[in-house]
Amino acid sequence: FVEKRVEVDPRREKIVAAIEKIRERLHAQREAKRIALDTIKDKRLVEFFHWLEEHGLADDVVVIGGGVRDAYTGGMLNDLDVTIKIPLTDEERFAFAPTTSQANERVYHYVMERLERLAAALGVPVQDFLPPLGDKKIMWRGKSGELEVQYSGPIKLNGKDGDPIYLKRLLVNADTRAMYSSNTGPALLHLGLDHQGGLYGRVAALDDFDQGIVRVAGDGNNFAIGNIIRLLRLKYQYGLQILEDDEALMRETIRKYNDGELPLPDVILKGVVERQMDRLVATARNPAAAMDELEELGIYELLTDRMGLNLEFSPDEVDRELGRPAAGRSAFRVVDWWDEDSLEVLASLFSDSGEGSEAEGASSPAPLNPGGIALNANRLELETTGERAKSRLPVDDFAFLKHPIEGFSPIIFEITPATNLPLMMGFPEN
Image (cartoon, rainbow, N blue to C red; front, side, top):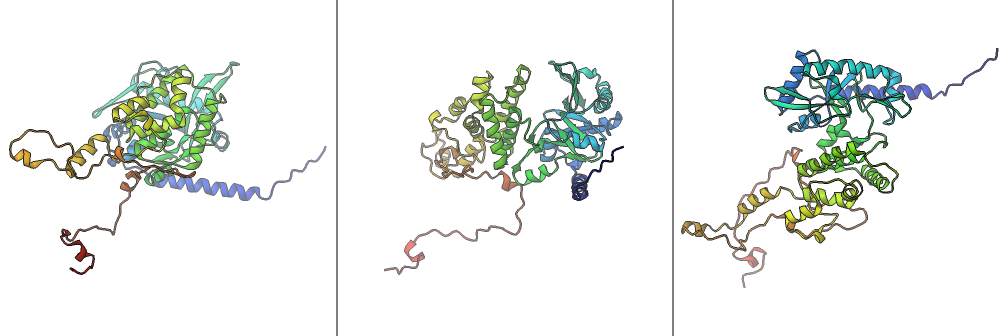
């Protein structure tokens, strides 16, 4: 017999203990952060949770992704993305952490058993939840309306050699409430919500949202074009800031697509990318600025010229809608504080509307130069300079509106016409 001694690094126990403390702190953070169901604006989501309880599925099914974001922000859901939560072993938790890792056979069979029960309650075969997905939609119907239900949890694929591949996609640990993803993407979409308002995944992303920030979650791998579009959609829909390191990752990924280092999406995913682009422009608070950045980053050219996508909106069409020349576009376009309709209404409140003509019964149009304050941000000629310039002007007010400001009350005591300006400035009358 040969005796073999293995020396253990004395720091190992301290490292393991530190990791365990971090895990406990994150678990406590997830436990403390909740969304009260009675505060959710879209009552269809609340009814869906009650429906899960009635069918004995509430302890298994978790709503994930954009639905959680909408529940937190008071928005209306477009659809329901769901997954199945499962207790994971310590070995599985460490193994599933990298985005490039797979799930395993145990996890797959566990979630399939519960997904079959969900499919039966909805009256559809479980195969309708799994790829290849056809045109048929799985609809849940409640008293307040209906929502399409999409499954985003682990699935089984066949590899080139015939061996099974268990793609984890979005996997939720029932014990620690942690979320494991196959993609690097916006942390605000790596969230889950259960029937009691409990949160799962990257709950710190909600604190970031309150501060006007959106971060990228993941190890940097599997950061696809769809994830970049989702990140930009959050930026322009809610006026959020993308951090410098995350923006650098985004630009580097686009460069890899253009240089052929990353494969472009296949035919099946092209339709998904088209819908994501349409949603980005449709939900943007300033579509023109969104289209400008898509063009400046090279995304629009990548999707149309190299992928052959037929996008609903183009930079030239946005220019025509805004009445601006195409050559006037810039990577640093102005960010409108309101949409065009609101600007017109506000401008009418601050401009001379010609009340004298109305009193005399005249129906002549308003004068060409009405005077007053024109709140059309597109007429502002602003430019940012410098190598480190990252901001757009004017500063978007959305982040400020979410923060209550206390202890400051502006009050106008008196407005006095300046009939004698020299006297008001302290000069003698003569």
